[in-house]
Length: 349
Length: 275
Image 1 (cartoon, rainbow over the protein chains, first blue to last red):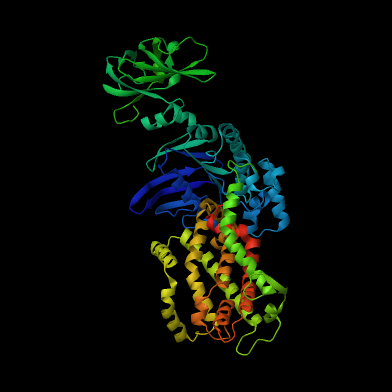
Image 2 (image 1 turned 90 degrees about the vertical axis):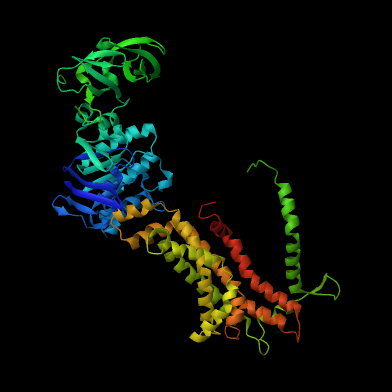
């Protein structure tokens, strides 16, 4: 079901947390609200499910105006960060609770619980108590409980934050699989760009109560709207370098590179360049000289910090098995076609 | 269980400290069933005559022990139920709802809890008399419940505070009303506190002395504590062994409840954590 948030405003006392935010989630789409803590992403989520009231604007599920409806009548499934399972009930009763509240008959409840347990792969756990389950299993139960009454919208509030690294990887694809199988419209709140990029159709990157950019993950990565977006997406992160333009070259602290054709003639004399680690290295020639000040081995790849003479650090990621070592003086090149240029106030050029 | 210190010194110290109490209780029990030789502490002959108050007709001017026991039970049980029900709802409101003057009520609770209630006794006496509840069990129950409430609310609020709010939000999202959420999802989480408070306020009512003494001195509303006190004040025919037997009779339910429910009672001092 299509979700449409129009001119949504939220204030806490004197403080305006979110000012006239607009967001449309298409039916069956999974969208991520991504941003640093305090950016208003959780506030937005809790407004959509009805825990917070709106101070302005409107919210539509499909054609239905739900702006003033209480949570109980919105038909929204929510998965909380700590799963919020009911500790005194068995897993079966946990999942059945939303149906029991709707006073469905026992046979229907049993059938629906079995179906959803099958979907999230927990049929053997139904008679246990939440405390007897691992984090990943509790997560599956929480998903089952949120989905069992076929909600219009599924909301996920940092669902992976409490899991260890390996489970997180597994649940990432599991949540996406379940979302695709049910075809439900979903909103994921996260501060982890990898989760957002790997699970969602589109990402809404938020900062200070505003959506800075709303785009497909790869598009957002390749074409960030501004310096904040460029810095937020990408792991290892992008490096920013002060540069000045002399003729048709960018002059960096220790070296120079050619201005690419698409930027030619559009750049101011002083600017910042954003260089992603995969576009800096010996395979792009030479010209930027510095010293390797940090090496991080990641198995398949190595991450190098190259410190230029003026102190600027540019990160580079290289396939492992190369002979660069800490302290080496290197002169590497930058892939000029993929350099991102930003003006002094952070806008993309 | 292996411990990182030796347990026998602790046991020795605890035994020495509790020895006087143990001796006193032992002699109380022994004395109720025996007749000692005057001047000696050792019993001479076995008898149940000191317990005759249980089956004999009461002496003139005294109530039957069973009526008094029933009064005490009604007083303690009603107080316990009233305190627990009101604490359950009031503490939920204080813990979860954002209503006007919430901080004032919280502060008031602490002050009332620390307030020496005995100083209120004259005012309460006047109010009860004005309402026509003086010298009635209902009057004492109302007063005792009211005085017990700050403690109960405060304890229950502590238990509610440990329940994660996400559980309630999840319940609301699942379509349940706030009342259903409280009844089906939150109450089971605070159940240890509920049982502890119920037992604790029952015991507190069972042992209450001053309020019945002052507010219901008549024979109809007599409870065991005032019965016992009347017994020793009656200096025309002092019978210490009878006094000891009634005292024993009075203490038996308390001891039994402690033995059965001691784990649940400890919850109240554990601040709601399971120990």
